Amino acid sequence: MDILNLPRPAWMTEDLVLLEEQARRFFAAEFAPQLERWHADGIMDRAMWEKAGAAGLLCASMPEEYGGAGGTFAHEAVINREIALAGLDGFGAPLHSGIVAPYILHYGTEEQKRRWLPRLATGALVGAIAMTEPGTGSDLQGVRTTARRSGNGYVLNGSKTFITNGQHANLIVVVAKTDPKLGAKGVSLMVVEADEASGFRRGRKLKKLGMDWADTSELFFEDVALPAESLLGTEEGQGFVQLMQELPQERLIVATSAVAMIERALALTIDYVKQRKAFGKAIIEFQNTQFELAECKSEGTIAKVFLDHCIERHVAGRLDTTTASMAKYWTTDLQCKIVDRCLQLFGGYGYMDEYPISRMYRDARVQRIYAGTNEIMKLLIARSL
Ligand SMILES: Cc1cc2nc3c(=O)[nH]c(=O)nc-3n(C[C@H](O)[C@H](O)[C@H](O)COP(=O)(O)OP(=O)(O)OC[C@H]3O[C@@H](n4cnc5c(N)ncnc54)[C@H](O)[C@@H]3O)c2cc1C
Image (cartoon, rainbow, N blue to C red):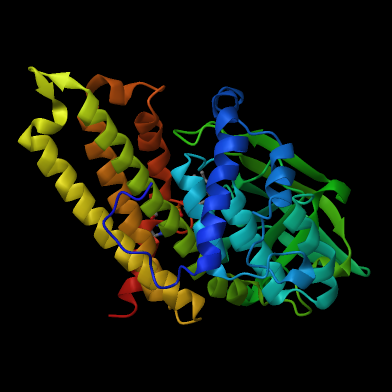
């Protein structure tokens, strides 16, 4: 599905082209046939994580010595695009591979990396990151979950909500205060092996406006005794700095899927308007349809060029927070606008659940909210003015 008139980006090497083909085939054969059932069940099968792991599509950017494929962020970007092009945005792998695993790789001790990364790569462990709480989301310094020292370890107490992979996750990176008096400097990341944590409880899988089968849940921690090695790294109070360093990648992941979803919406709509007829001609023959799609394609192309620029800079280790925030805010706003305009061209069918464009319309809305709302992105951009 290459609907935009762009040459292959410079960061897309030959091995990435092969990865793209492999991922496309894998998702079409293994995931796409299950979509309707997952949609009805409201969740995908846990076993699919292991299938994706066996196909080498989890943790592709993790070093081989820790079970990964030894790639870079470009590998994650290719896989994430295929997930979005296949309409699989309910699958939490981009977060698992591109957010949770990098926390362990960048801040974990050698022992922590060896303990968790290989099992994240096979899908034996499913990762989640638990920042948001019922009382605080954007204002992360306000988290009330605590990890208090107790004997040789910690005791974790608090509740989290809106957590992606919440029902399936068994490796949960929890944002907690190890020293509630210190504000941001009292924040630490605690890694919870959920299968072994007594006092840990999963709440509801939340019903949402869109992304019906995405696993988004509440999590509760009540006097969960954790060993000292649950602290990510060796020093308390580093959590906030660690979060700030990793968030640009999270924003780029969202931008990657936003652009892929724009591509998908355009492809589906162009197909449809060529087939559907009104007043004796195909819908695409109306000048309004052509102008609408010409504008959407132009804007989608501009978005992809900017995204490719960001990916190239990120792979080279030179993507700053301001630019990553621009990518997240601008591409997700554009995604919502373009999907809306595309849906209009489907007429009443665009409102019907069996037409993917209607699901894309519902699914798109959250992109402006999670991974830092678009208002928070503008605050970050404004700091550079
Ligand atoms: C489907 C889904 C999946 C998610 N997955 C995860 C996950 O895996 N892990 C996780 O930790 N969280 C996750 N989230 C939570 C998400 O990151 C938060 O919802 C988001 O950060 C916003 O926080 P909030 O909901 O508390 O909104 P609030 O922070 O209460 O914001 C409410 C409104 O106020 C605005 N606002 C807040 N502060 C300012 C400001 N300073 N200036 C201007 N406007 C402001 C916001 O932009 C927003 O419009 C997910 C959410 C959804 C919906």
